Amino acid sequence: MLPRPSVTLALAALATLLLGPHSRADSTPPSLLPGDPASWRLVWGDEFDYPDAQLDEHWNSQNGPSGHILSSRWRENAVVQDGALRLVNRKEERGGQKWTSGNLWSKERFQYGYFECRYRYAAAEGTNNSFWLMTNTPGEPAAGKRFEIDINEGHYPNEVNTNIHNWSDITVLPNGKKTHPSASKSFVFGVRPDVTVQLEIPVRARRLRLVSTHAAHFHLREFRVYAVNPDGYPDALSPTADTDKPGLVNFARDPMAGITVSGFHKDGPDTRANLVDGNPDTSWVTQAGGEKTLEIAFPEERLVGCVQFLNGWKQKEAWKDLLENYRLEYNDGEKWIAMAAFDVKEGAYNFARDYQTYGLEWTPDELVFFLNGKEIRREKNQFAHSPAPVWLSLAIIPWAGRVSDAIDGTFMEVDYVRVYQPR
Figure 1 (spheres, rainbow, N blue to C red):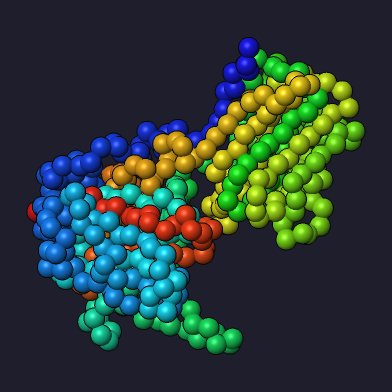
Figure 2: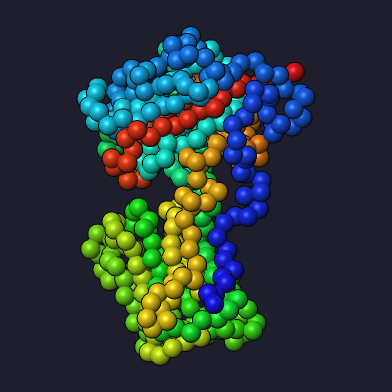
């Protein structure tokens, strides 16, 4: 009989709140608007239910290169078909760059309201799937500053990035680089820094391993293997985890246990001891490519009741570079047997597989960001006070993951974009 793990894998409450239906939407106004839907009226929208040639009646296209990304962007990469807009990535040399994508902005401009777009990400790392507002008239606006509000810069498979940029107040640093005031917040769904695999049926094993095909290097901070404990197990994020419950025995900290790992980041120092030092602030950092493995071997067979590990690194209040897939296995003396497995790309948090709805309520006083009708961020509106078009764009960027031939032919697919204003 296989062990039946009870695994803390995802933000279950957020799953209930945030994940929308998988089917395509109809043309009726969405039910998940901020406040009372009866108080909003549709003033502009595009359902992309027309021939491709009509796209130019509503949208402008970049038709040229962009120096800060890896793709030039062209009208030919924006394709309307089957009631949707596809912004397509192609591996082709054009405009002095090795990739092409699509970038559109609406011919109409808007000031304040509720802005909403339902779309799916391009199904490849290294892509930036964006819905945003940005001023694009010459000179300074009559009110406020030149601004950019990224309602979402989405990274496959499950990352949402919201950004607010002030493009009027540019500062030149001593090194010659330019900077500007900005405020960003990122959200990663379906993954978390702390993973607890509590076994309903304990297993006997001398060897356990964690295996991942995560596309880049990652930080693994603590790896704990607990004996069966009637008083339960600690919060995995606790810095004093091994003493938080009476009777805890962490087999991983046995000095006779051997730890084998697949490699080290940039051939750096041997950091495997950090996995079992009881300090969540230290970590083993894996190699960048290939399969990443951690194996722990005990001097004799142990009865295991729970396995915990911590991953990622913390930037302010947000956890970054969280493990997107893993297998946790034990060896019965002849073969490896699964204890738990997780892959965000196969689950409900693959934003390239399922449509999600991204929204912004823009008022003179506030900027409120929404995912599937639920608020995820609220900020004071300090400088966005002039009309701006709606932008839809796809780009190839190295900070969104590994750039590879897997990008070729992928596309960001837009179901609709709509603008509402109060009645």
